[in-house]
Length: 189
Ligand code: 5GP
Image (cartoon, rainbow, N blue to C red; front, side):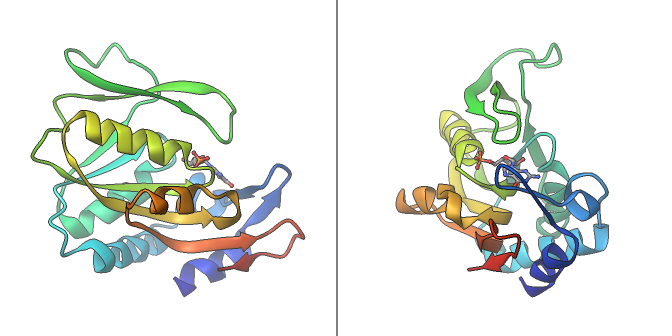
């Protein structure tokens, strides 16, 4: 998506450890107009796939998931990063290692909010090694629900997670795929 690529070029900062900082429009301050256009693009890609729920992971996926859900007219469920007191009864749970914090979290979704009839679109801000996405796919499968596919704002293609998941036969659509950024200059696929 050209608009997003331009915004990344303009405002993105490449940090050590292959981290792209996009706090000015996606991860801290939020450019609602841009995220709405991203949601519209995701609807163009998956709008005919009878999606019943959008699933993301807290915290940074929530904004893009909500702006996407507006176009689909379905609820957003966000997986929580540790078993909270507020979740009672049956839960689906998986361990996910965080790319940015290098910590392993228990990621949980209440059984109330995902069920076998659901057709789930997974949405996240970033795709790097694929740990978060693979964990979310596992949660959907625990619920007996169907993974329609994944929609990612920014995929770092050189870290391989996207292609790993695509090889498993799951549809992964990323609005911007970065092929290289270690020289300071960002190159898209
Ligand atoms: P993965 O699990 O695919 O290795 O990493 C994806 C998760 O890590 C995303 O949910 C995102 O929050 C975080 N992440 C990975 N790479 C980056 C990055 O370059 N910048 C930012 N801001 N977050 C990232």
